[in-house]
Image 1 (cartoon, rainbow, N blue to C red):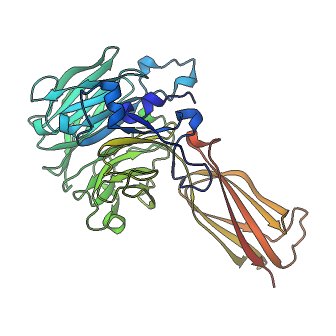
Image 2 (image 1 turned 90 degrees about the vertical axis):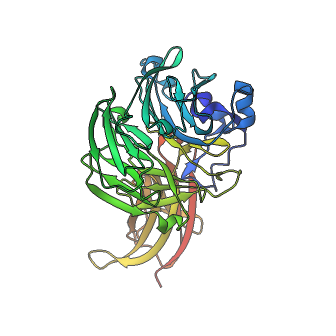
Image 3 (image 1 turned 30 degrees about the vertical axis):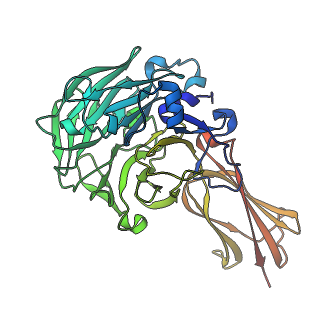
Length: 438
């Protein structure tokens, strides 16, 4: 992909850090390679000042949104497909920070209740047509902006007669927006023009929301569903468009009683990524809300976060931006092996086999080579693609010629490559030995 650094790092406030080596490190999220980002993976206030002077500082960052604007896209050149527009809510300053081009930042908004003003804004969403919606929480309204050639401009505000505490917003494929209202315990649905469509009730202090929108994401994995953080940050729910609960995950099981989930984003495969600002982690769930992995810890080093809040994912390429208290980080979706076990068993004909249980944190290409005394005995798998979660493979204890191997110690080498943009840049090799036979 093209070096789209300035657009893909939230706020474009960059400090250069060396990207970790591809092998040996955590790969559920990975820092882009130097070729793509020049080692620029983290935005800080110092670089923000360089780009905007002393016009602003990070002050209670909240929601994030990324999109690929149609008006800047050249359909004949796919090399520009990763050039994103990013929008961040700087709630403490009542403003939006965004990129007006690949190399320039701009600010929009000031404190107040009128046109071009916000009061403690929270969530934000954007679509490729240039529509941008902000939860103007303190003013109990939704603000609609348009991102045109001259930057963000005011379109309208609405919802004042419906909303009490709008917190987050997400868009659908039919010019409809879904808004969580913490005070009312509802999801309020509006048209882009501000007409109130209906209310989904039965929630408790809902926070972040992400709507699966097939027409916008262009993902064949997308389905019509609502992902919402409920229970004042203690639950993650999946609902259908009518509000019926499909699945629920109790976040206290992984976040503890003090953990609080903030915002949510979906990736290309409908996995849900959620920030926990208290424990400084990013949690990953599959589309049925099965827990997959936790990434990060508190700190300011690689794979550490400082009170993460907003998260946005460009689903096509797996580009991830995460807002923190005083900075933002830029990742690609990768994959890792959470578990690799070898056990002995029998096949349907009661013949002995070796069973390999491999748990992936995301879809990945997997190759498995079996060796003995350094010599290759069998190529069990070669560059086969598998889903996240548990994948089980069987070796019939035969070599490449079909002969049953003698007893002894064998080495199982697993070579894994992630999909998304990280494919071709990162890989990981695991090796495990097991005794076969007597």
